[in-house]
Image 1 (cartoon, rainbow, N blue to C red):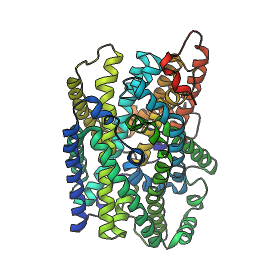
Image 2: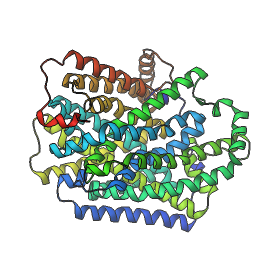
Image 3: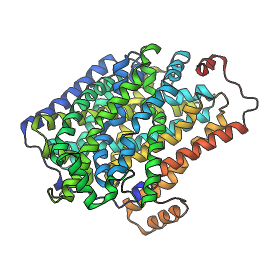
Image 4: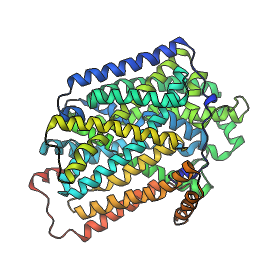
Length: 531
C-alpha cells in the first residue's frame, strides 16, 4: 500500500452510518437502481460488436463527452473518499480537488486530438491498442494490458468500498451485503450494457452531481455556521487543518505532500485510461474544442461536496457540537443523511449509486478488454471471431469484479487513500508512454518498456507489502514492510505514486534518447505530431 496508507487506518464502524428510514430516500435509491439496470438492458440491445461494447461506435457529442469524462474521474472517490480525506487531513486534500480540474485542461490539450486521430487511422479500441500502434511492440502492448488490468482491480475496489457505505445508508443493510449485492448489480449492469450504457448513465449522474453539489455546499456552510466559524473551530483544534498545506505530517512534509498531490492529480489525469479512451468515442474532431472547460468546471463544482462536508463535519466535532460516532470513510453519507432534507439526501445518494455504477462499468470494460483483447494479441494468440471476443470480454468482467470485491473485503485502507493508489498506478504507467509518446517523435519502444516496468514496479514494491502487513497481521509481513519502507528516501506521508510518476518519466526520456538511432515513425502516424 502507498506511503499515504502507512497512516493508521480507521476501522469501519458500521453503527456510525445513519440509516435512511425515510421512504423518499429509499424510493430515490430504488428508482436509480432500476434506471441503471434498464439502461443496461437498453445498452445490451444496442450492442452487436466489441467496438459497440468498448467505445460506443464513435457516436457521442461534446456535452456527453465532457460530462462523461468528468463523472468517471469523480465517482465514489470524490463523494466518499473526498470528504474522508478533507475530514482527516484538512486542506491537504484540497490540493487534489482544486487542482484536478487543471488535469482536464492538460489532458485535452496533449491527448484529445491525437487519440481521436488514432481511432481514425487504425482500428484501436483500447489504450494498449494505441500504444501498440505508436511503438509497434507487442511488449508495450502486453505490459500496457497488464498495467490496465492491475490498476482496474485497485480502482474498482475504491468504488465498491464506497458502494457498500451508500447501500447501507439508503437501504439499511449490513456493509458486507451492501458490498456483495452492489457488486452483483454492477456485474449484471456491466455485462448487459457495456460502454453504451455507461456513457448515458455517466451523463445522467453528472448532471445530478452538479446540482446536488450546490445544495450540499449550502447545507454544509449553514451547518458549520459559515466559513469563518468553520475556520475558527478548526484552527482552535489544529491550525494545520486550515493551513495552505494541511495537516498531513510535519509542516515541511505537508508542503511536499501538497505539491506531490498537485503533480499527481493534474499531470496524472492524462494517464487515466478510463478518461483518455473516451476520446475514441467522439463523433468527430470538431466537438473536442469545448470539452475541457466543461469537464473542468463540472469537476470543480462537484468537488464542493468534499470540501464543504469534510470541513464542516470536522469543525463541528472539534467544537463539541457533533459527536464523532462515525469513521472518516462515512463522513459523506453521514452528513447527507443527518444534515440535508429528504429530497436532497435522496438525490445525492441516488447520484452516488449511479456514479459508482457507471464509473465502475468503465473500469470493468477497459480491464476486461485488456484480458480478452490486449494481452492475448501481445502473446500472438488473438481471438479472431468478434462475437467470441465479446463473450470473453464479458466473462472477464466477472473475474475482475470478484478480485476487486476480495480487495475491499481484506483492505483496511481509507477509500480516499485507495483512490490515490490506483490513480497513481495508472499515472506512472501511462503518462510517459501516452503523453510524451504521442507528442514526441523521439520516443522509442525501449523507453516505453522501461517506463512501464519501472512505474509499475515502483508502485507495487512500496504498496503491496504495507497492504499485506495490514491484511494478514503476520510478523513476517510486518518485517517485509519495514524492510521495504527502510529503502524509501522520503517521509512516509510523501505519496509513493507521485515519486513513481516522476521516476517513470525520467526513465522514459533517458532510455528513449539512448535508443533513438534507426527508429522511424510509420508514415500514417505523422499526423499525430502536426500542430
